[in-house]
Image (cartoon, rainbow, N blue to C red; front, side, top):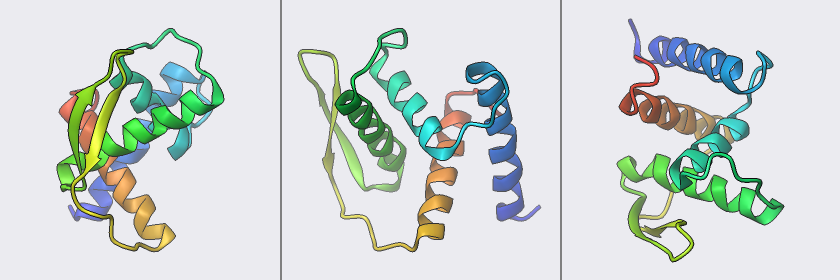
Length: 118
C-alpha cells in the first residue's frame, strides 16, 4: 500500500473516531483536531478557554506536532502549566496543499504514538 493511500485511510479513520467522540458525528476539520491536541497537551480538558487561549492551544499543538520533524523543541512548562517550545529550525515555505499534508501526517503520527489509532 502506498504511503499516500495509508495516510488517507488513517486520516479518514481518525476524523471519524474523533468526530464521533467530540462532535456527535459531525466531521471535525483540521483546525478543530489541532485545537483538541492543544487541549490534550495542556491537560486541562474541562476548562473553558478565551479566544486568545484557544489560539495559544493551537500553537502548542502545532509545536508538539512538528517537534518530531525537528522544527520545534520542548522548552518548559510555565507556572500556569502551559508548555512552551523553542524554534529549532525555521519551517520551509510550503504551498497550502503541502502544509495540509504535513499537518495530517503529523496528526496521524501523534495519534499513532498515543495509541488512539493503529
